[in-house]
Image (spheres, rainbow, N blue to C red):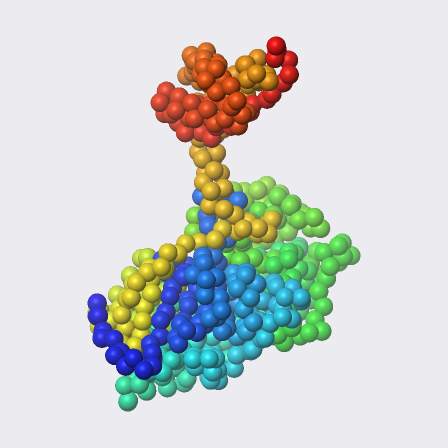
Length: 575
């Protein structure tokens, strides 16, 4: 790894500092901070969707405490994609940090306005990208370049401060046959690489999308699955419920076009679908005069005329299928003869859950179309040959893989070496790492404390890490309750009574023996404490019993359940 020299000119600091708050060793939660001359811009503010090991947590985002302390330096937020991995947390950051200026595509901006609500959105200054335009924001010169993906209006960013030049790819793939004929701006990217080749003034640092590096070859175009959509819609006689990821806006647009040709009326099932469709309409991507059918009016149509569109973020797609399978939607119920089309890869760790949902749907005599063999899904991220192509176009001095789990970052680094990249110029960073570019020379300068913020979207509030740990403890070891009653003079008049719920030991002889053996000892403990502490509060007795029970259960049974102590106070027996 290189340790480049620093700029020694003290008259003006020409360096660019970059902090990774999220997006490394994980797919999602992307958030990068660029700092120069006491000014900051934020690039992306995404979310991550945890698995079943985080009960009650719908999504997480990067902890932005570093920015709260420096909010007066923030000049703008730049968003690269409508994908939740890049913008899912932006509405929180905008309001919490009171960011006044937002740059993004027309689509991302319209969706953000919907998430913020009209009052908050009207307080902001919104700027829509145009590919290759030069945006001058304080010390920063930012040039967005259009990138194809599974969503409309994806952009990479070329960020320059003095002689320091960074290319941030965002999430992308190189679609040679996009439906709307708007292709990746290869010419604009090539110009950056040519500058490097001819004058040594090209890209210093490349942040590259690693999400699909494990797949060889080229990703397919969204165009490749249109014929399959037509086959399904023309051959299916019953209602069709089509489930896909919200960020797959090109797929949504293609599906609506096919539905029109096949004479199917479209209803929108959930809020996420309604929000993204509203944003597509406002951005001019869908015909603003387009009409949709209300779910309550489906009864007036023939089953062969109905298509119900359901979309969710990648982390929530399984939950939406569960809502469909178990009739959790108020205004829509699945029925025999329906066909559910699941157009998307299964999120990690959900194969078993998907099998259970499929069984539930089959029991209701519902047809299911999904999986790799169904040919109804294509990749959203660049594969190996496209990633190599980017290296050859850009010719950067340094490379930092991002948007990927650890193995993907490492494999992307190896792929860079295969294209002729110097291994000493590749940096695999951790979230919280800070780097500095100074006249095109890079060094890792330190690390800040970083973490994540947990959210329960269904209840719209932030969740404390302590609550999650308590939920985990309850799930693993259950809860033991101890109840007793004291009089005004702190004499024990009833109890203790023991109860164990969701504990692996609660129905065996070991637990019954524990209660018999320790009940008398606990009575002695409470009475001795009362004599020594006549003015002790009810809370003091609760703490005493809780500590004693934790010790007894751990030493005698070897478990650590949550212990709840219920102490009552009565006036009887006080004389």
